[in-house]
Length: 126
View 1: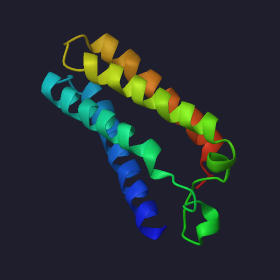
View 2 (view 1 turned 90 degrees about the horizontal axis):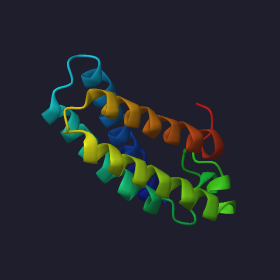
View 3 (view 1 turned 45 degrees about the vertical axis):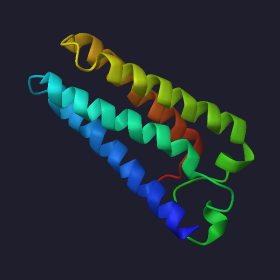
């Protein structure tokens, strides 16, 4: 479990870094290449994340994790939330290089809301 949890946490950090890069770039001139690179990173890491929660990798494993037991007791709901993140991140990656900053910003906010909704239900407060 420790290795899976470490991989999961590293992937979340990478997702967070991509979100920060997008936010920073949207506030600093919106370079299309940088937006696209960050959005593609986000989409790729989002695609991996749902599979990083196998049984036995929750709090009961004894390894420090912010993952709540609800991930496993409400697995269909969690899987749907993970799928929504992938879909919204893919949309963002699809428009990130368009040059339409308003559309990128709007979809960035949708992705952020998707992250927040999942965290409220499935992540322990830090």
